[in-house]
Length: 172
Image (cartoon, rainbow, N blue to C red; front, side, top):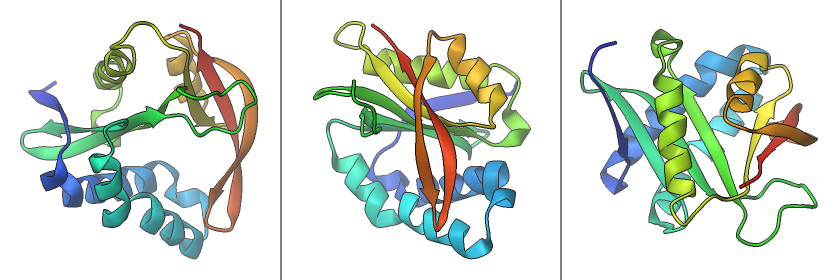
């Protein structure tokens, strides 16, 4: 794999985060949704106002993955907002982890997740949460290798479409 940089994003990266976020989500899941649902979701999840707010929040962190100066992935972590009864105050979540298909399968996802986990566990091992699409079996296997296990499910809205999403937890 060519030289890859994983770095914390900052306010100067908002447009890049928006672009790589929209591209990676669409590349991975875009075929599942009517265009209007996909666009509604992308505008909310990768809108520059939302990203600016996330970057300004000291309790959240965003990362960019760059290869040869081009953004090929991104991630976000922070306070957990998954609808599970065991999620309490101070719970933390891996919120996003996306890579372009062209760089998947070479260990970069593992490097990115390990970067996220180190940030989340910076004050010691934590109970960590994440949501993963019910039909994304590869991602589920990946997260299981890091100690995450399914503990529930919920409906994840993408526009008017609601996906079945699994809630995974790793106990600290």
